[in-house]
Image (cartoon, rainbow, N blue to C red):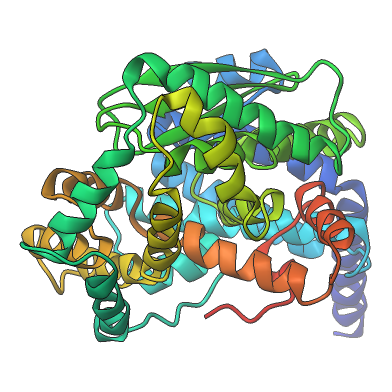
Length: 432
């Protein structure tokens, strides 16, 4: 039997050597190419999953012509995750961040495929698995003191939501002036961003106004440093949205984020995984969080209110007599943003009905019923994605302002987050 033990040992050594050779032959570049093809195929089974793609057209054609089944895609995702784990890189290096990025994106893909196959996830499980954060949601009663303060700020008859909604309707931008106001807002957001972040010389965007959407604005990145920015006009657009959308969808938000990844990683390093953007992934947590924080970074302190009063109000043909009160209202209502996540969690997990979610959104979002219905429709469609906005903003703010005390340092920290393979863990902040 000695010869058998020798043969078995030799076979084991051969298999180990073959495995080591295969591991050496594999690489993050190979895995990235397979990840892009996999993501394109998931997009064929899940419309809206691929938010942007500007890689080889033949890969898209191939995915469209012969996508694998959901079961096959789930198995392929697990196989790719195992391949990523076998790649040896230094954890704190750029390659280490790249490996962690791919692992996180693939983990999110696996969970999305579970949902597509009829599986279930709680709101918290989805937030943790798809977006990389742990939730610590507040009870709605925690927001009642904010409502009490707003009762004093906007006195009168009727519900507080009705009074706030009516007050805000005094600041609607007339439809025939909306494009001029939006372009002026975006131009100022761009000017302030360009003072700190160099942008490709040929970058550009197109602006469109659309209807019948559950969102208020969207950036469709086209590649080659171009974006399509859409503004939803289902409801009249108020003055507060001009700077919000200009920064969030444009500068230093989604347009800048996607351009930097294309310029530095996709083109600069030939990392093909950044030619595709799967929406339900940790990348969205970074995208939405930085886009929201970008508003306050570009317009610190009272600078936003001053620009609106001096430039945007005249363009819109609106009186600025109550501009300060309107700005104070916006600041107060932002303190209620966390209520949206609690309502969304209760709704997705089945603890409240759709009608209850709408009523609670009216109360804590201080919006009309039609606007509350739009918010809930967004939650129905995008589920735990909603946490990317407020929680993402809070984590980005904490990461940047916790280490950078000057405006220049904060912009530099923002550039670091936007220009690399960043995931929530890189922010160095315990989520929740």
